[in-house]
Length: 85
Image (cartoon, rainbow, N blue to C red; front, side):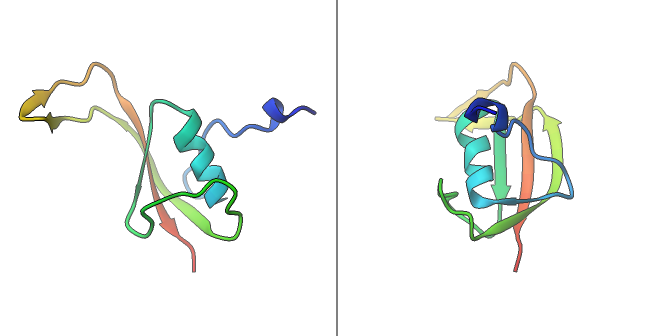
């Protein structure tokens, strides 16, 4: 098996992943957004910390972008994760 065959493409609700796996999703999946109350940075190469995917949703994200209302053109994939103790 080559490296590309082992590349993580998605996170599943209720599953635990390493920091490195979450960093891979953030870096490689352009429509993914990760929300975490515990961590400000997911370091590539960190396999010691683990995170539980609490929820996974697809939703339109409405936000203020530089003083203007940003109208989303598509849904974004959102993962909500919590660090395991």
